Image 1: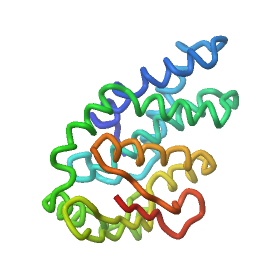
Image 2 (image 1 turned 180 degrees about the horizontal axis):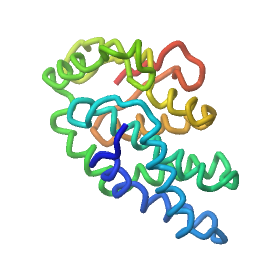
Image 3 (image 1 turned 30 degrees about the vertical axis):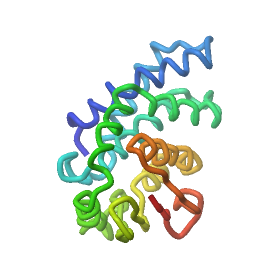
Amino acid sequence: MTYTYCERLMWAAMAPAAFRYLAGQEPGWDISALKQRSKRIYRQMVFRTPNIGSMMKNMMRICLAGGMLWLSVYQAAEGNMSEPCFAGMVNASMRSPLIVAAFRGKAKTAFTRKAQQKRAAAASSADAARNPFQWNAEFVFGRDAEEYTILYRQCGLCALGRQEGLPHLVPYLCALDTMSVDWMGGRLYRNKTLATGGDCCDFYI
């Protein structure tokens, strides 16, 4: 991938909240140095990750950029970040005002038939078989505009975790799904995920 406005936007929106959280949790850390190492690793991670298309053509690029940001900070901590601290950082950065506002802004249009048709059209990626960093899913229309199901058979964040040797951290990234659906005015019910060994991520929204 190339380092585009998508990756720059995600860093600007999420990194400040992540580092504020870490400064409060780990007062002995040099947050300025951590930030510099993280940004360097983030850029390197972007460049070594296969391309999945631009943000305008594939909105899942935003999710992948978020995953790269979080894993880059973990790597920059050089073994000093616990898994609970990592989970807290993910949640704190998701609660960044820009991120919350972006999802709440979708609340009026998220649960419509038009929105469902758009999701159905984007669910299955044409090159998913060749590119494990693509998401691939089956979309199931609901009984009305206010419910639907998505069965994810392939997840780019899982591929990212494997690439970086950090698959055990990927389940913590799944928190973004529940939070984002809540902010759009919905409720996510999920029994299994690919990240925890399931055969799919079963989203009933």
